[in-house]
Image 1 (cartoon, one colour):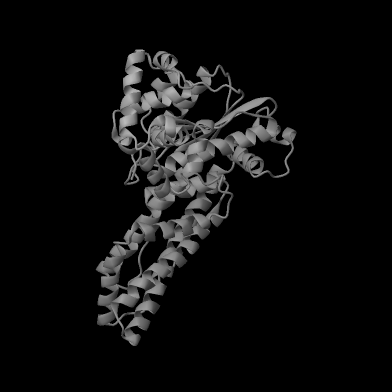
Image 2 (cartoon, rainbow, N blue to C red):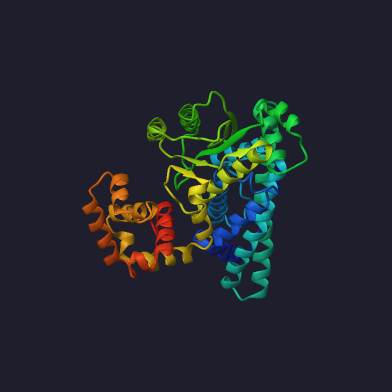
Length: 418
């Protein structure tokens, strides 16, 4: 790590630096989103490898680095900022190694530096119109930002190099290397993949992604998370009458699982396992046949996982074929929320039983008697709820069936509209 000091600043520019650092602590969510996207772009990998658990960790580390740099420059403007590697930064580095992204993934700090510099310059140009002061401030801050990130990368590189032997010498690392080839469609034969994975790729497969995201402050008990993920995976395997599974530890908070079956079941034992595993969510891909089905099923599960994360959904289990329509409808969240509100009107905030009845009625092809059986209620109750739904919606169900069905599906995955 470099230890040389940065050039001294004039008292006036020191004060400008301190003022700007205070403003940097209040970057908007839009500004932070630009920073986060630049970081993810630095991973130089197929996005199938970068799932929401890594994206979430990267966001947390970005904010931590920003706060560290700004706080240091509030107290000592223009002085070299010493990196403080947080638990989240260390865990993220180890997970990147597990994904086969090694130290080159730290290029993300370089790409985020460019985004951070543009945001910082915007602040600097509001602090002074004096050309000499601005030049001194920009020169000093450029050195400060680059030195801080250089020192951070040096520290993390040293850490990763120490961990690479441990993390890349075991069975999990070998499986990840092979799976990366399979998922990216690289030229690897089925027999080669089977030999390396110790898993037969003929027949039916269904992929699952199990994960647990950190809370808003980035806190999580990683030791406990691994046990919860495994317990839920075991419960699903047993419920599906499978005696084996292919499992990959994709990170401290994520498991990738394949079951040799086309029928993954989530019965009462799985529900109980999820209740005992707070925070754990499960995404299930469509079943597939052979090597291509193995690959596609995982990509489906990963897409379902990204959907739940993007919608900030608390739904515990999501099957890709159940949320595929929602994924298409929610590419633009603002427009999706507007569509739901415009279509359902006051039904959005009505008794959930009324919405559930409308959904069941549509699924049962507008047969009130079958809907009553499906919901374990009386036919007259179904009819009363349907009448109330028509009163709450801008247009009655019979005149707007397709839109109502689609809006209810979105609301089921994203219950809290913005």
